[in-house]
Image (cartoon, rainbow, N blue to C red):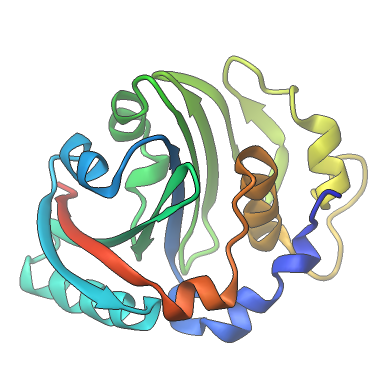
Length: 201
């Protein structure tokens, strides 16, 4: 059964600090260590729970004067989940496409200004890119391949935007549809994340 944006409505209320600005990326068959290498990262000490990762990420951003950011990673089945508090590398084509070599890469992002992005790449080919708030403006090699799924998830493709904005939660649901990985409160709260710092400029 296809999950919908409503199934991820808990995210903003349960994790308000992270929900202000984040990027979630799922990469198939690539370990956290290999993903760190693909992003030319530097391993850091692991952290328990996404709240600790979020706090450390903001502190590290200040320490590094905005040149590097801290990320948290964990294996989930056949995938590695990469979380960037206040980050966006996962949806940055010049970083994501090379890092997607030989694998699938699904990423979604939003920031405090309500700018968002969803990126799906396969083996360095951009399959789909769109802003979840404006789902009718899509591009990539398969911009319409997920149209029916997107409608079932709750992206407003045939009607005016609903009063309640579920675009960011819907991006979580679309990522789950593509990967089979459900992001849950327990996963975010209880996981000991492998951490690294990566260059952002």
